[in-house]
Every structure is written in structure tokens, then in C-alpha cells.
Image (cartoon, rainbow, N blue to C red):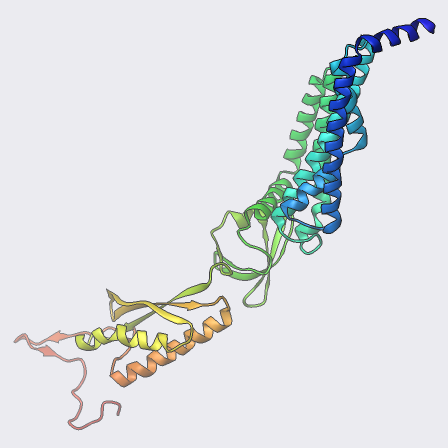
Length: 368
């Protein structure tokens, strides 16, 4: 016992300067980590449910453990000194374990914080917010499994077979639950990319509806006709989605046809009439009104106007008002809408046309 004590005294005497330097550095590092942890605690205490990046960093810093600080301090001190092999190996292994566990804790908080920041809503307000518990379990299992493998590898354990077994097991589970995982990752894609959010009105294929819930497997919408529409997240993202809640306005297209007997001077008046009708509605502006085609039985026109605002009911009301105003103005101008009809003209032997209807008596009103 006296011999071991004497060896310890000799070791302290020989390495006193190195131990002093290592101890000073260790105290400074531990002090910085304590300050960082204290700042993290203050950030979390100010807003425990914060989803901002400041809140994420605060939660990460607040999870710094005292055992990790102590292990890091001992590792630094012993790095500057030359302890006996057994002691050096013991404290180095302790530092590896403490660092792996601490890194797993930091990684878990950072990943969950990033997901929470991308959600942009407080937990419990959406189905994805409620599912954060499941996501937390999955992330925790993943990061701590990696930490255990790192610890075993640094302790000299052959982890090749363990990693291979985990890989084969993961492949088997992935194949068995392929549909579930595809919808889960699709939900995470919606969460991160945000093509739409709860409350948005979206249109895909022939369906238009309001997003009610975004779940881990399905998204639920209420269509304009009142039905509940349930779509798998994977199938939904495969479609072209139009988010009607984005932007600051909407563009609407109205198509109509005029009879071929319309005089050219009246055709030239159509864009001016359309502009007057559209701009008489508050928040509406004409983009264009042009003759687009010579149809089989009509002169086809396209009217495109823009409405400021996203309220669909207001837009439909303005659209109806514009249509009624067009009917009224065209009637006043003597411009007739075309019906999908055909007229057959027959030629006499001398080449004159034989009209398919009798001529109207002189003096008869047009609307008689």
C-alpha cells in the first residue's frame, strides 16, 4: 500500500506542471459548458414550447449532462499527463461512453427541434403535432442504437455481425411495412416541403376541397360539395396539386361565342365592353378579352380577369355579376351569343342561294 502511495506521489510530482495546465483547460471548458447550459435553460424557461431556431438551440444546450462534463474534464487532464496504462484506458473508455451518450442526446434534440421548427405549430394542434411522440421514439431508437454501436466498437467489440443483423432486420421490417413507411415519409415530405397546410383549399384531379387533417398515413379534406375525401399521402403527392390558398388573388377565365353575323365594328367593341364590365366590380381587373378561334358555329372569345383576394364565395359572386353584366351590355349593343347550331345553304341551278327559311314579312319586329 505504501509502495502504491509512493508511486502516486512520484507521478504527481513528475507531472505537476502538465496536470496544472490540463486542469486549467478542463476548468475553462467545463465553465463554458455550464454557461452554455445555463443559457439554454433560460431560453427554454422563457418559452418551453417554442419552435423557433433559438428554442431548438436552447433545448440542445440545456441537455448537456454533468457526467459528460466531468468525463471530458478528466480526459483533458489525463491527456496532458502520463498516467499508468490501466488508469488511462479506464478513463478514456468512460469518456467514450459519456461522449457517445451525450452526442445521442444532442442529436435527438436537434432532429426533433428541426422537425418541430418545420412544422411551425405547437404540438397538439395538428395530427402531425400529435404524432411527434411516435417520431420522438423512432429518432431516439435510431440515435441511441448508433451510440451503442460506437461504444462497443471503441471498447474493442466486433460489431460487424451486429450491424449486419440490424441491417437485415431493418430490410425485413421495411419490406413488411413498405406501404406504411412510404405514407409516413410522404407525411414528413408534406411537413418539410409544405405544399399545403391545414385549412388550405387545394385542387387535384377533379377534386377541390379544404384540408382538415394531415395524418401520418392519410390526408382528409372536405370537398366543396360537403363529402369527406380521404387520400393516402403517397398518392396525393403523386398528383399535380393546386393550392388555392397561396398568392394574393385568383385568375378566372370566361369563354363565350358570338354569332358569325356580328359586324366587325361590334367585335372590336367587345374588349372595351368587357373591361368596363369587369372593372365595375371592386377588386377585379381585366387581363385580356380576345377572339381566340373561328368555331364551328360561333366566334369564340376568351375573357381572363383577376380578382384580388382568396375568398372563393366572393370570387363566385363577382364572376356571376360579370356574366350578368355582359348579358345586359351585349343586349344593349345588339351583340348576340351563338348557339351550337348549323345552317345549311342550298344553291339553285342558276347559282343563287335558296334560304332554308322563309323571309320575314316586311315590318315584322325582330323579336316577334
